[in-house]
Length: 218
Image (cartoon, rainbow, N blue to C red; front, side):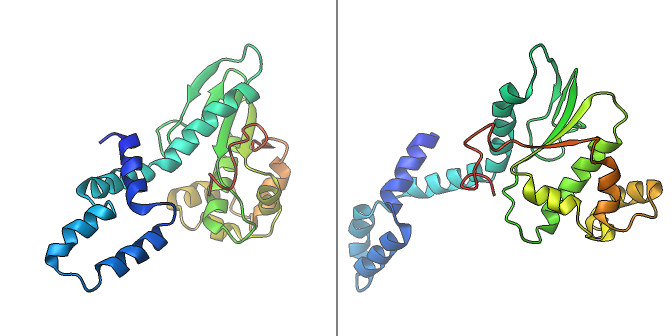
């Protein structure tokens, strides 16, 4: 089934409000007998095609974060690259792709974090952000280093915070070992970040691509 056909089949079944639609079906089917079911199912488009369509959309939805990551990077490129700047390596897939950074050119190295910060604890997101900053800051390169985020307020607040580094590092054994072998004495995030704040430019990409909003990115 094509994706467009799947969406059409789901729309026929669910309507604009799936909860309301299901309530209507419940009322229609209560008190009916087996011989009535086929007619009721047909009336409300509860057909095999709708079930197949739901399975297809569910599988595609499981990959949506990868799609957002890829499109976000691609749409940012015209805004971040300078005239004549050459892309040497790019990683469009979210997660571990085997490449060191999301983007490397002849002038810059960059990571992109498509996170709609809410201002709460967000520990797992902070842990990932810290690792990306660390990877950029520790890179021995004369190229400029960039960490692109959706809004700088909460990332910078985290980097300047006194959150315990043991908490930040605790979920990643290999990263914990690497970091502590270099910096055994640092206790909180700000102790690592502040001396290196000038090494990595933390930049807001939300204005580069208007589609990168909280309605899309979570």
